[in-house]
Image 1 (cartoon, each protein chain N blue to C red):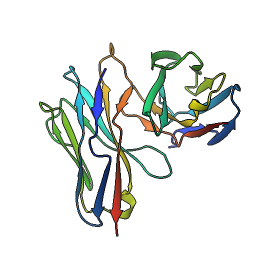
Image 2: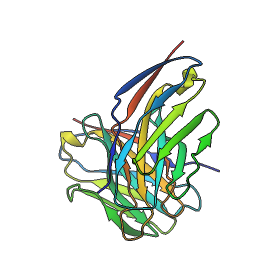
Image 3: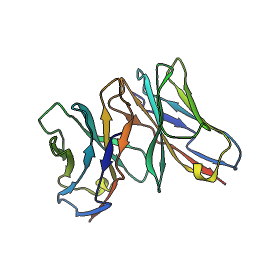
Image 4: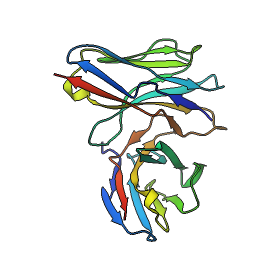
Length: 117
Length: 111
C-alpha cells in the first residue's frame, strides 16, 4: 500500500508571499500520478495540480507549481503570490496507474494553510 | 459541464438505522469512488466502481456497501449505523480512474 506523508499540519503565509507545502510518499511503482487537492471551508475537494511520474518537467498551474523529485519521492507544492482565497486545507494524493493495483487515491493527512491579510 | 452531484448534502440519522447516499458523476465519467473523511482518520477510501462493477474496496466493514447503475450514478449504503459512522462522505468521478473530481460531500451525523 502506498503511504503519503504531509509533515506540516499548519502553515501560515502573508498575503502576496510564497508558501511551500511538503509531501513525501512511499511506493515501489515506477509510474503513478500525484495530485494536490484543496479543501476550503465549503468542504469540496478541488483539484489544484497533477503530476505524472514519467514526466520530468514540474507541473505548473498559474500561481501553483510543484517540485517533483522522483528519486527522493518528494512532491512539494508552491503557492506564489498568496491570496486570501487560498486559505484551505491542502491534501497531497497518490494514485497508481497499474490495472493490477488499486486505483484508489491515497491521501496525506493534510496541511491547513492560513493567509494573513 | 455539470460537476459531481451528491445528495443529500446533510443527513441526521439514529443509531441502528440505515442510510443511502447518492452520487451523480460528471457526464461521460465511468469511474465513481467513495471516501470517508473524519477528523481522526482523515480521508479513507471506501470503494470504487467502474462500469457497474466494484473494482476496489477499502478496509471497511460489510455494513458499508455500494452499487453503480448503468448511467454511472452510484449509491452508497450504510446499514446498522454507529456513532462512529458520522463523517463527511465524498464521492469522486473520473473518466478512466486517473484524475478524480469530487462532489461537495454528504455530511452524515449519527445520533
